Length: 118
Image (cartoon, rainbow, N blue to C red; front, side):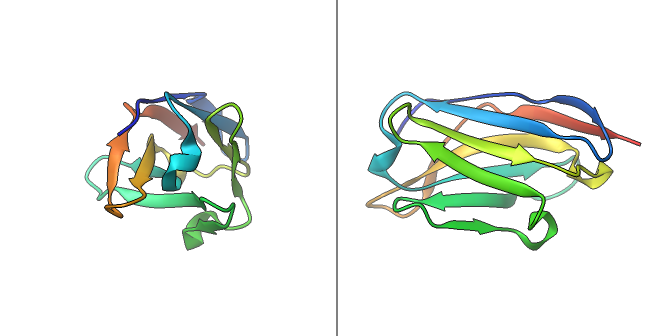
């Protein structure tokens, strides 16, 4: 497992942008994938974006074209650039790491709140 610390959340108007960052306590290259989940009140946790060990990315349909996940392996950080934010993007965003051997998401950050106002 790894310690993950998110930053960059906040309050933004619809149409605005935010950049989330996740700092890992050890090399992110040791994990199969790094990702961002989000959880809104009353809803299931949703996988928003992932970046694989070799740099491939995937996004949930609702954020395609608006969000971009990236990483800096040397700095052990993963970022999520969020543009054209909508009210429905409001949620707690959590950074997570997928164990290379077990293939499960078993490392989680505490989360950072993103609130998009009208």
